[in-house]
Amino acid sequence: MTHLLETAAHPRTLRRIAIEPITRVEGHGKVTLLLDEQNRVHQARLHIVEFRGFEKFIQGRPFWEVPVLVQRLCGICPVSHHLAAGKAVDMLVGARQLTPTAEKLRRLMHKGQLLQSHALHFFHLASPDLLFGFDSEPERRNVIGVIGEHPDLAVRGVKLRKYGQEVIRAVAGKRIHGSACIPGGMNKALTIEERDTLRRDITQCIRWSQEAVRTCRDVLEASVHAPIFGVFPSNFLSLVRNDGALDFYDGGLRALDAQGATIFDHVDYTRYNRYIHEEVKSWSYMKFPFIINLGDEDGWYRVGPLARMNTCDFLDTVFAEHERQLFRQAANGGMQHATLAYHWARLIEMLHAAEGIERLLDDPDIIGTDLVVKGERALEGVGVIEAPRGTLFHHYKVDENDVVVRANLIVSTTNNNQAMNEAVRTVAASYLDGQKLTEGLLNHIEVAVRAFDPCLSCATHALGRMPLQVELVNCEGQVIDRLVKGADGACTPEARAP
Image 1: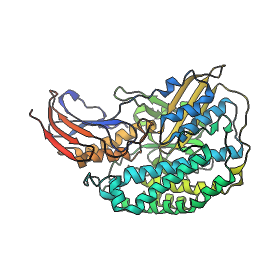
Image 2: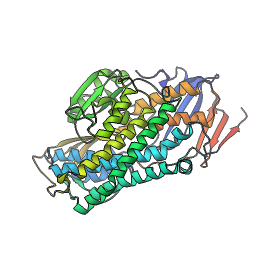
Image 3: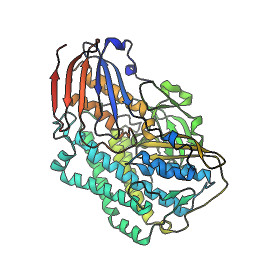
Image 4: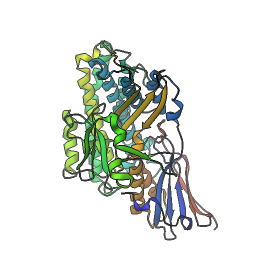
């Protein structure tokens, strides 16, 4: 059910607080809070303040350009858009089943993407909050602080991300915005030399990933915040394999409710729009997807690492499955609803991706040369994968001249839109309600948003501290208090006469 703090009854009589921009996330967004004279929170909203328009400007382009064009949405997870679009255009050329080598090369590239993206988010963006505390000194709470006080951890983060990028480069030809995925398969084989180069470091990457999972688990178990911070019930959605295992690249759609009961299972993802609709709200450029048979009030859901650990039956790699079982045991075998558990789940997935890379590199098919298939042409294609941030939908229609006439993208962060708003409201009500504003309290809101690793613009990460200005405005629109955080992280209160 939509949170009571979504819309205030009498907004004109309340003071407005704006957190803009949200820092250490990708893209630009802001949070607004409406408070009464006792600083009680009456409304909290996460706004997405930019418009990308990819669904429109690819209309009129030939379909074979789409996998290359749409990956320009993002500088961090372009592989996800490249592959989702690739799966959609496979349908357009009738390639319902790829060659074993082509599919395994795509899976290898995708696991490299997951490894590098999860490493980047945890080590560079999220770990300062977890290691130093949400309201620790801002000049310490950043990646430079992590390098200074935890140098081994910081270096491992950099090397894990570098390895993931090298996997992508070996498969796609480039670390960012490669062009290997084409309609019906791949345009580049993996050489024996490239495979052997990747093999040399994968054992170390698996070991580092194991240590990272343990570090995150220990930090969360010792945290006073973790069991109560941003905890709220929700539905969950992800792809699962036919046997119920987590599958990042393919499978059927599974949705579970907050207690773990099945809403739908093993749904053919090409029929996604019979199960999911998108709602539009006037105060955000991002849509609000929901499960149709539950309605827009109760049908919203979470996607991404937390959802995937809740929805899958098991992981098919040894070390990651052991960690998944510990993750579920921490919730007494039930569904994990804690927002901070996203970090733990994300690192289990990083370990799972590293083990999966090792398995694929040992598979003889990975150096095959049979890369492309064709079949009966079609005028509509849907591609769905599990991107680092969650389930990603690409849907295209073309005309008889092979030109795109309609496109619909539901990106991972869009699927999490309502859930991120719920997290903001829950944290605002628990930590800010009735309190005097401080930089540390404001950071609690940002910590809740960061846990989702949102890609607000599907563009590059905004790394580090961006300037932040928070204002208290009375019902006449006068600024009565202002808190300014500079690019150096220092906060300066600036009082103004009413």
